[in-house]
Amino acid sequence: MLLNALLLVLSSQGVWTRKSEPSLDEADAGFFRGSDKYDFAVEVPAAGMECFWHFAHQSGNFYLTYMVRVFTWVTGMASDPQLFVTVNSPQGALMASKNEAVGQMNFQTEVTGFYRLCLGNHNNQFGGIRVFVNFGVIYEGFEESKREMEEGEMVLNSTLAGIEESVQKLQNQIFHMWRHYNFARMRKGKDHYLLLSNFNYVTWWSATQSLVILLSGYLQLCVLKRLFRTDSSRPRC
Figure: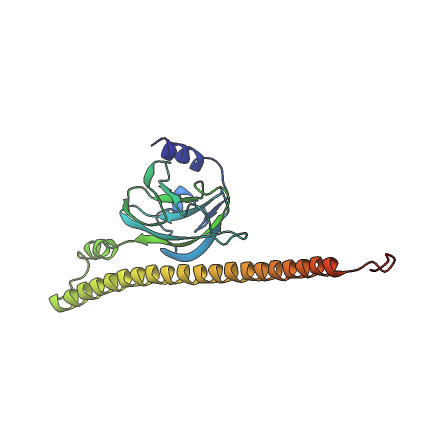
């Protein structure tokens, strides 16, 4: 509990942040709607933090999926793969937090504005980490609200309404399938980089051990030659 409180204090400090959309005034907030989903990998240095700002409207479903791959340039391994992740509302309230290597978050956005997503590598003081991140906002009720506003102006027949509802459900199912596919792709990328790290680790240590063996053999040969060497200035029996 004390560790989580300390990490929350660290996450509230000023760090390098990135916004997914440009800033806007309150008068333009109702007319601005940008990209709703992002999928990328980011490297967080040892004891460092990376933060991102994502714009979301009210009544949206915010989701986040992440997976950690730990690496160090010296040994190819690190001690703690856990990542401290926090999501704060535009007012600064904590919406969700996790301290795990792999995690998923889902919550409903209650306020329109920029939500802050921070990835803290405070658990690992000596090794950097590569994080596969997939986050965004789903507005599942947007089409229904729009259809309710237009009911007074036009009448849709039952067949067209059924088709639209089926298409909307199909789009949502495809989107969730896409999320699961991204999660599987993250796991595959993590395994790929782990194999590369282990390969480099084994290669360098094998080369080092071979060099040590050759050097020790050469030193032993020199010692044996000195044992059998005779001094020509001394008289022989």
